[in-house]
Every structure is written in C-alpha cells, then in structure tokens.
Amino acid sequence: MSLRERFADLLIRAACRIAPPVNPDEFDELPEVLKPLEKGDHLTVAASADAADLPSVEPLSLDQRVISRSVKTLKAEAISSLATLHAAHLVGASVWDERRIAARINAASGIKAASPEVLAEIEGLAVTWQNDLSAITNALQQVAAISCPEAPISQDLRLEGEEQDLAADLIESCSVELTRHQLELANPQDDDDEQELNDEQEPDPQV
Image (cartoon, rainbow, N blue to C red):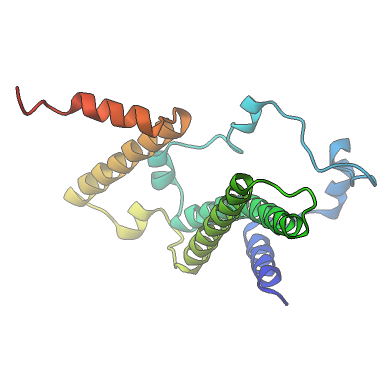
C-alpha cells in the first residue's frame, strides 16, 4: 500500500470514529444532484464566486467555541477542516506535478515546447503545492496525535478566580488575532503597498 493509500485509509478510519452512524434507508432520500456521475460528466460545481467563499458551516465565535465545546470536539473539528484542506491540496499538487512532467517531456521532444519562463513557472507552482501539501499533512498528523479532555477547557481545569480572568484575557487576545488574520485574507494587500505604507509611517530622522 502506497503512502497516499495509507494516509487515505487513516482519514477514512478517523472520519468513521467522528461521524454519526447513518441509516441505510436515508440514502433513498438523497437529492437528485447526488446521483453518480454519468460517463462523460465532469466533476464541477456551478457556484458563484461569492458562494465559494462562504464557510461550510456558520461558525460560533472563537470565545463561544472555547467555552461551550469540549476540547475533544474542537480537535475533531480541526481534523475535519485540515482533512478537507489536505484533499484540495492533494488535487492541486497532483495536477501541477502532472503538468510539470508533461512540460518536461514536451520540452525534451520539441513538441509544443513551452518557453523557459513558462517552464520555470510550472516548476515553481508544482514545488509550492507539494510543499504546502506536506505542511498540511504534518499538521494533520500532529493534531490527530494529541490527547484531549472530553470537557470544555474551563471545566476540565476547574478554573477559579484569577485563573478565570487569565483565561478570558488569553481567549480575547486569540480572538483579536483571528479577526486580524481574517481581515488580511478578506483584504489582501500587495507587498509594494504595504512597504509604501510602512515608509509613510516611519519618522524622518532629519526632522
């Protein structure tokens, strides 16, 4: 069994432990869109760009999740999100690797050979996707290996007095940091614009 097959088997077994049992009769009620693809159909989903940016589920705020959810549940949610991200990157890394191989073969044979610039871009994208896939794989394995209490963290630690205040401050700082990251993702800033903004904020030493 290859490394990819072993990892897929690991994800399937983890999903079986997390997901609730399904009644076979429920499959008769599945909508038409979930019917198997006919020969020649393509694996595509008609969705607007705005719909593609929506979260899979409407999340609670960070502090609500930390307070009301068991740490074991938070771990299961993290594994589910990482596994989904891993699947998307596995597709991306595999496709770009196939394109890299095809570009090399075409360049060696002289058939539909791409320019050196295009070849370099394909090589770079293939390496980037593969590196990101490896990082996500490592993160998924590390999260899956940690042990977690089956209660919310405040209950498990039996926080009292100043400990409760400390926990609230730490959760608030994490929430602020999460919001900052979300704003950066929603409004990406070019490196040149960021550098220009930093230059404007730096005091003039001659003043």
